[in-house]
Image (cartoon, rainbow, N blue to C red):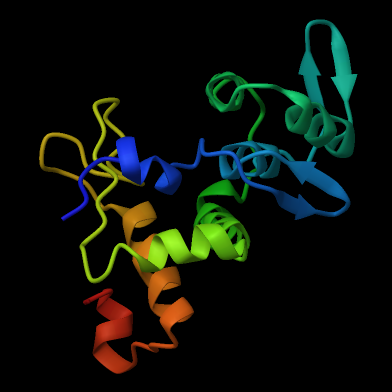
Length: 162
C-alpha cells in the first residue's frame, strides 16, 4: 500500500510539477489548476478586482503550489464548487498522466492501493489518522486502470472497488 505521496511516490502529489493546459493557460501543477477552477466570478484581493481569467492567469504564475493552496482558502469560491470539485480533479489528474514519463511511473505502482495519507486533516481527498474518503487515491487508481485498459463495470465501478 502506498500511504504517502513523498519520496519515490512524490509524483502522485498534486504539488508535483507537471503541465496542465486549460483554456490557453498553462498551470505548473494539478494544485494550481484545481485552485484556479474554484473561481468563476470576480475576485477581490488587496484592493483590486480580478476577472476569473485574470485570477486564473495569476494563479498559474505563482511559483509554489503551497502558496496556491493557501490562496485557495481565502478566495470567493464558486457556488457549485461542492458539485464540481470531483469533476475538476478527475480531469486534471487525467491530464497530468498524459505525460508518458508520469504515466509509466503510475503504472509502475502495480496493483498497490494508493492512499493520500496526510497530517493536515484532509479526509475528503485523503486519509488522516485512519479516517477519510481518499478520493484522490481512488482517482489515481482509476487513472492507472484506464492507462492499463482495465475498465471496472457494474457494482465495482459504482462502489469504487478495486
